[in-house]
Amino acid sequence: LAKTTQPISMDSYEGQEVNITCSHNNIATNDYITWYQQFPSQGPRFIIQGYKTKVTNEVASLFIPADRKSSTLSLPRVSLSDTAVYYCLVGDRQAGTALIFGKGTTLSVSS
Amino acid sequence: GAVVSQHPSWVICKSGTSVKIECRSLDFQATTMFWYRQFPKQSLMLMATSNEGSKATYEQGVEKDKFLINHASLTLSTLTVTSAHPEDSSFYICSASGGTGVSTGELFFGEGSRLTVL
Image (tube, rainbow over the protein chains, first blue to last red):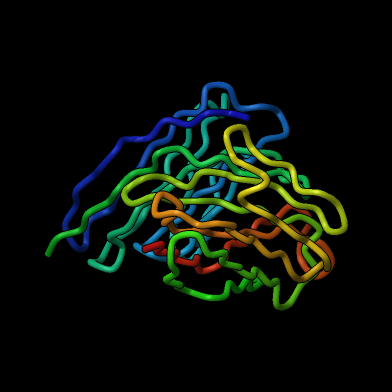
């Protein structure tokens, strides 16, 4: 299973765009990249998933370069409520495949 | 999205007793369920993988006789912490992979269950 590396922490202010980059040098051909958000004492919540190029949904964008060895989660105009831990995971989407969590990035948003 | 529910949300028990945590997929059939454990300020650690109707596969270092996992139906998996000790106090999170009712391979997480062993 591919290992991921993320910054341990990031600080931002309300209204700013936040970009969190994840390194996954050993990503396999069948692996997808998925980002989760976790608040204290809650289960992880799905943010976005992609395979290559760019994916956008109502809460975030995910940028994946052609070599797929890294990815960047972009959160537009963060608010205080975006303070959380963000996890980047890579894995096969086949049913029955577990996702292995790395250390994640703790994002702190201040006013 | 699909919903995975855990019960109880939190439980306090005495050392030496056993505690059961339930994980249910509410609106889809989960062919596979995963159990994770998370200690304070740490990441989630995969404990075991269970497929409906078969024995769970445990990760290295996880005691199968201490953490009993049952996946008797496509919507329910249970984790029983037997003879709990204070060091078992942790946040236990289940996740489910579909299955009928969701895109194959999607992974949905429960809200987590906080276990405190006195």
